[in-house]
Image 1 (cartoon, protein in one colour):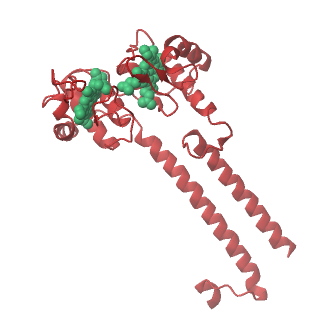
Image 2 (cartoon, protein in one colour; image 1 turned 90 degrees about the horizontal axis):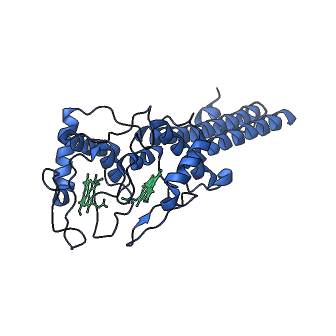
Image 3 (cartoon, rainbow, N blue to C red; image 1 turned 180 degrees about the vertical axis):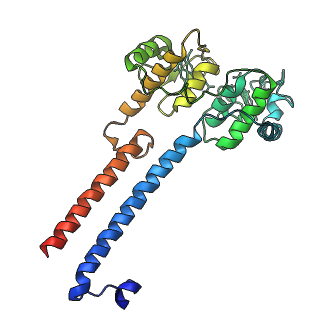
Length: 283
Ligand code: HEC
Ligand code: HEC
């Protein structure tokens, strides 16, 4: 190695010229792999963070209890027993009892940012969640420790890839379109309430909505919609989400697009590699 290449100032002499071209090539390659790798890592970690929680530990329940006392008890009562009278509609904070609503209801409400409720609205809107995944899991574990209710879905419950999309479409049209619209775009209900668009809902949130029936939405128990039925509905709704962003040009919505983007970056990298190689050969 010459002094010049060690310090990174490449001098275009006869011997260094070829080396610098290869150095440029290696640098481009490293940069592309880094970008692609970061993307893959980011999308992998965002998937992992949505993964179902393992069974609760007592430390987790304790943490959840503390978070609950700080952030939720003013409306739901010190023991989650609910606060009567003084309802939101009447200008107070009265929230319903959470005894028996289950971990799934807590995860649904908190991960979609509906809870903690910010103000007296007809319906808690979705917003950026205030609690991270770990805190949400702790809150869910605490509420689940008070009384049994619908649990957070297991990885098995959410393994929808092999489900039938045709069956999912049929079940969706029978059970969901009257409120959420045939394309899952949502719609108005009576009294200022609305069924939200399903375009952002993760498989876990779709499952939890069916299992817990928030607000006017009915509960779809395993008797009404079997675990297999739920998987095919999740598969169908996921396909609607993908279809709503054809071509992968909508980079604003991460999700199915990230994989396409990764392939695109890798493909672009290959083209650059070939171009650099041809350039080196020709000269
Ligand atoms: C400002 C008052 C307020 C605060 C703070 C609040 N909630 Fe609520 N919560 C409500 C009201 C009112 C409802 C019922 C209306 C609705 O579902 O939108 C509700 C509903 C819920 C439900 C649904 C219950 C069911 O029957 O499915 C859950 C779960 C819940 N809250 C959990 C929490 C948790 C956990 C926190 C703390 C992180 C919290 N809430 C903070 C007022 C509040
Ligand atoms: C009677 C009307 C009604 C029916 C039928 C209904 N829903 Fe809902 N759904 C709602 C309402 C209202 C909400 C919002 C609840 C809230 O904000 O607390 C909701 C919320 C949801 C959410 C949460 C969306 C998000 O991004 O936070 C999902 C997912 C969902 N529903 C899926 C379904 C599926 C799947 C079906 C059919 C199996 C279905 N719903 C049937 C009314 C309905």
